[in-house]
Image (cartoon, rainbow, N blue to C red; front, side):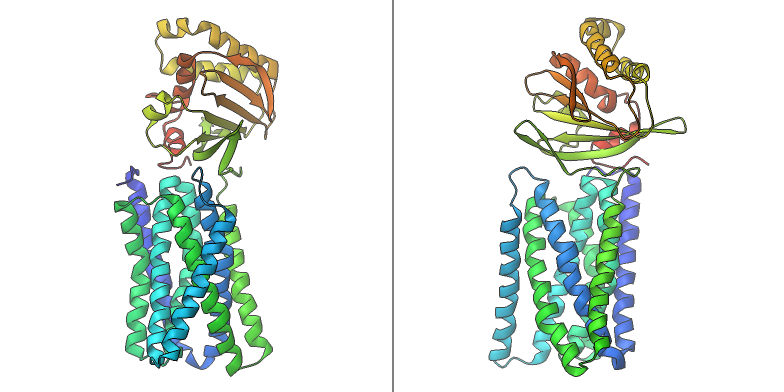
Length: 420
């Protein structure tokens, strides 16, 4: 089970309840407005296609990008094509072999339920990345769970399914995200695998929207309003996903998913905000070759690492140096600090060489595999590399040690929660 703080489990339970309510509300609304079904179908078509283009595909690429050596965009788009044509073959096979249209409705509803299940898994895995990323994915899922409910009800009814069957599929779809969240707590899937699955389901959704819902809605009511509702459905999903993505920023700072140190690609392990009394100081982001939730393992590893500090206020060289020295003192005895005096003096000299750092500046601390530490400001290297594995570990302990400068920031950098 992922090492979440207790409050995160409560939050996941609340998200599961919200997903159930959102899906159920959408399906019941579709049932009550059957006389306006062509408009709902039109909106649903745009929403389904919007989910595929603005949510599933970008998320699949993002999940894959978090794993070093993961599939590229071209590979994931191939899986989207596989999903599209696989659904096409299944759909036409049922039609050509004389299967009742209710069977085709059940097929569509089952795909929607499976997608909702993956949504729940995606929420859980996103929280494993960090609390902030998890909230963003949850917002995106909740915004289109309503459409999922509408789509599930519409697909069954459109293919002459009975009201009872439609309600049963609706309840199954409403429960699916909760089941997905529960599964994510028991089984931790590689993010690259989830990328393939999301890309595959994007293909399913593109077929359902473009080859099924759009023609059906327009065939019955070839009016401008029907087309406008399709565009509106896609626009609503685009707006919702865009707002959710904007919310991913930590304290207004956009945090990249990857960073490059020489020829090595590092992935974001976690990010959070450093506060001092009532002041926001900086946003810290930790990058590693692969994700790790153990602070001891991160500090002990000889692999390359990167820590970026995006300043949220102006700081003088003296303030920077004093803050780092204070952090070093928290986890080292006087004798240990004395042994590190040359390296600490070199660090202070580097800070002094930088001078004052303005709000928005990015300080980068690279922990190289050869045991040296390098500091840069706004991508410009400052000072000479500082040698010593012991110094590297002492500096990392400023944020990840037993007595970090801020405990919830440590939790955020480990990817098990977010700094406020």
